[in-house]
Length: 213
Ligand SMILES: NC(=O)c1ccc[n+]([C@@H]2O[C@H](COP(=O)([O-])OP(=O)(O)OC[C@H]3O[C@@H](n4cnc5c(N)ncnc54)[C@H](OP(=O)(O)O)[C@@H]3O)[C@@H](O)[C@H]2O)c1
Image (cartoon, rainbow, N blue to C red; front, side, top):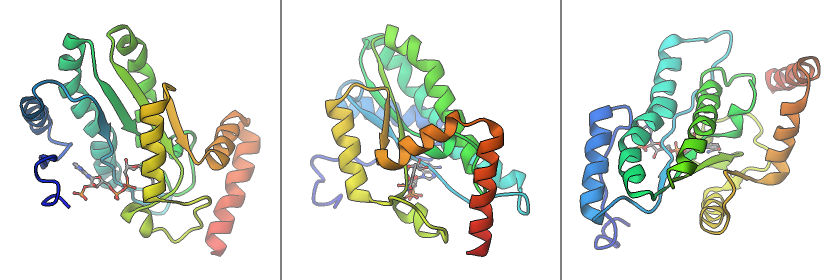
């Protein structure tokens, strides 16, 4: 694929946990493009199930380094150029797993909650600076990340379908949050409104169902 579109696509290998490498990659992209990119989608991410029996600081740190601090690295490298030119469109892929704590997501969920909070925090200032920040909270998508999951994934989308929905939302809507499929993600939005008693009753049922297989 890269060879087929070699004249249109430049590929810059990048580890988003490496702050200087993010700065260098943004500088190189700006040189190639002759200015700041029109659109950046931060999609780097890692997932590993974690709960009470396998709570592991090294795993938590590694997930936080990629999912959250990786986004901070990329945003910190991109934003000065965007603000200076008063343009730019940046989409950060978080997840509905960041809405509330979910059993077995004790490593991943907090990284996505942190991303959601980060984007909410930065948006008002970026609006004033003429830079568009979008938050993307997908449900389940069939990718290598979810291929390892051994639990039911309701409303699982094909990767091509998810990419199409993301592209359409990025190019045709101006909403801050992009979320799909709505039948699933709006249900999770409703769960955010539940008081703890009702929420934990539901999560205990979910966890018991998972343990029964
Ligand atoms: N799949 C889902 O159901 C789902 C749902 C909600 C949100 N998301 C989020 O959507 C995003 C894309 O996930 P995906 O489902 O497409 O998973 P994926 O197939 O596992 O892709 C993850 C991507 O992140 C890259 N990556 C990992 N560590 C990196 C690092 N240190 N530096 C740079 N890139 C790194 C990987 O690159 P390499 O292949 O080179 O390692 C890979 O391209 C993630 O943020 C994920 O959390 C996914």
